[in-house]
Image (cartoon, rainbow, N blue to C red):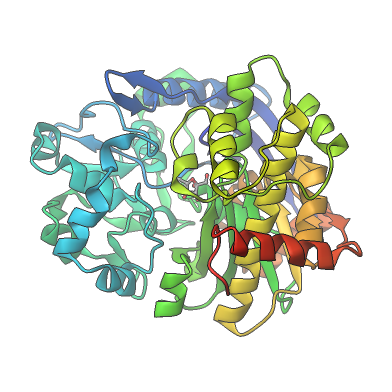
Length: 484
Ligand code: LFR
């Protein structure tokens, strides 16, 4: 099977093979995902992503036939199709500023509490609902007949079939968490025509076979299978947890998604106030999680520094003094692209802390601040669910960052099991394998296979709990965090 896994900064095509007790993956193609600013608007290069997807599928087919293709990507963003099925303009990047001020306008039409109790979603400014609301009255929305989220758009180009896979639909804020159906009336109330919302499908459904044109280009006709098309849903499925453990996960990449897996959404005022959302997982599970700003801030620092590599930055951070300045990494000023070191400096000065000076100090500040954001989220998850978290599974690209894994265990005061790096691709592959007949009856069977073949690396909390408590007290007294 080929797993197409598109992240906000890079995409990859992975070939996965599943047999009794075996699960292997090989990355056959990796490519950068670079947004394009055109006029004032930040876009995705979605045709480039499609081209690289095809290149990856050809590379996959070079080593043998494929039984399936599954696509997952970042969430919330979409393409609009006209009545003929043509794409109307380039999808806009969720970090674009077009949603500035939009949530407040939407909340006048639908109160935030109602929005939360229906959709269960964390009110992030870039949710699909707010992006669409920013387009209301525009020519593009007027001409649009169908909305397709990014993985569904690529699947449409491969197969000609339209639809919306549920895990990603759950990130739109147009989807009812409790019923698993579109919240069409919500859309209409904010001026978004509900005709745009395509039929829903679930992970494991067959989307269709590649069209004759695509098959000719690939040299083979291949079934495309719906997977947990939200990358975080696939990554959470790819967590090598054992049933019965009280685990939290951190899916650590551009974002850090910190959450737990539940059977039913939690849409209490406490969950809303703490900034947690309920997203849909594979097989009807719920991902109660918070978006923590993630390694984005570090990658933006590196983009600005140009010549410093990630390895150099992390080595410098490892050598920099611990327990320096800390910032609220989730503050809105860190969301858009830009000069992160300058923003970090401003945040430190505004909270009465001496800003970091060297590269190592800046990176250390980002990583310790991230670890503190993880700590807060993990503790709040314990409070919201009534069950303190006993172990954290950290998956995704952040697994390679051993300093971050150590800091996470230390700040949270619980053991961290790090890995697999490629959890999203693994989650993608095992869902396809089941749909194609592999003996993987439920998610625990899938996770057992992943745990057996991709043992995680343990990181234990150290003896400096009191120092991390002091950092939390400092964040509170600096006015950066509400006291808990
Ligand atoms: C992670 C992710 C998050 C989502 C963000 C924006 O890649 O999918 O889960 O909130 O990207 O789409």
